[in-house]
Image 1 (tube, helix red, strand yellow):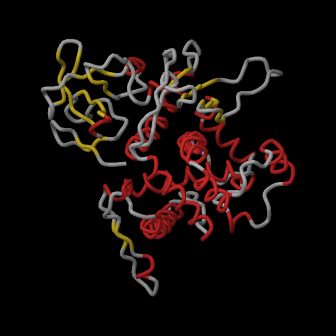
Image 2 (cartoon, one colour):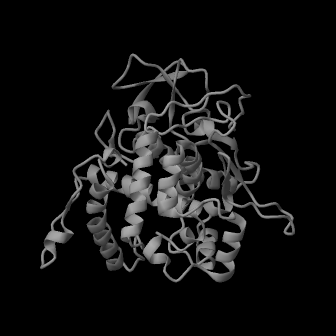
Image 3 (cartoon, helix red, strand yellow):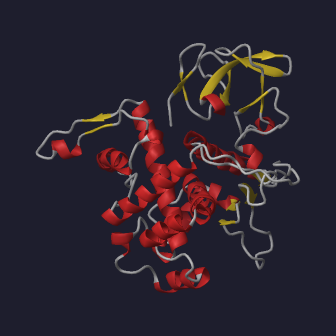
Length: 368
C-alpha cells in the first residue's frame, strides 16, 4: 500500500480516510489514478485540487460511510470499482451490522486496491454469469438452521459477517487451530478461487499441467478431501509442501492459500517500500538479513525478487512484535516447494494483467 498525503496541507493520510484530520478537506480515492484526492465541492459533485477540470461524485455507499471512493461524473454507474461487485449487503436494520459492514468494506477495498494495481480482470455479474460478486450474510436467527459458510461458488463470494467481530473471529481461529485469521485474509483467499477459474481453469492445458505438477490434481473429490482433512488433520509433511495446514486439504485450497499469501507479500512489501524501509542488521548474519525494499512490488520481475526482500522483512517485524509481547505478524515458513508455488501465482498474475474484461448480456444487479 502506497503512502498518501493531503494535497492541501501535506498531512499523511490513511487509505480509509474520508477527511483530512489537519485541514478538514474532504477526501476521495480515485482508483484510476491511485490517488487519495483532496476535494472542493462543485454543485452535486467534487473536483480534486490537483485535477480541477474533472468532476467526480462519491460512490453511493459513501452515504453509509463505508466507502470513500469516487466515480467519474460522466459515468452512469452509481457505485465505485469495489462496491459495484456487491450483491447482498448486511441487514442494516440490525444496529451492529453497520459496524460489521464497515469493517468488511475496509478489507474488501484493500483487496480491490491490489487487484486494480495488478490490472487483473474484474467482470461484474452484469457483465458475465461468472463475474465477481459478494454476498455478505448473517447466520439465521433460528439456531437449528444451517449457518452461513464463507466460500466461493462460480464467482460469487459469500462472507459470514460474524467474521467482522474480533472476538468471534478469534474464537473461530482457535477452534480451527489456525495461525492466522483476518477479514482481509478471507477476501484474498476467496478471490483466489475466483482467479483460479479465470487464470488456471480457463488458461489452457499447458497452464493446467503446470498447476497439477505443483499443487496436485484438482479433479480429486473436493468434499471427500475436506472431510478427510477435518477428520484426520493435515498430513505430517504439510509444512514441506504447503503454506498452511488447510492448504494441504485439496489443490484448490492450496492454490487459494498460496494466492492469499502472495497478496500479503506484495502489499506489505509495497507498504515497506513506501516508507523507504531498509534493513541493515549487525552481526555475523548481517548480509543475509539485509534488505532494500526499493522496487515496485506490484511490478516485480520474479518471485525471487519478492522473497529476497520478504524473508528478512518478516524476520524483522516478527522480532518487533515479540518485543511488544505480541504474536508473530507472519507466522509462516516459505519452504522451497511453497516458493515454487508462489512463483506460479506470480506468473499467473502476469498473465492476467490488463486482460480484457469479458462482457456478456445480463441484467444489472443493485449492489446495495
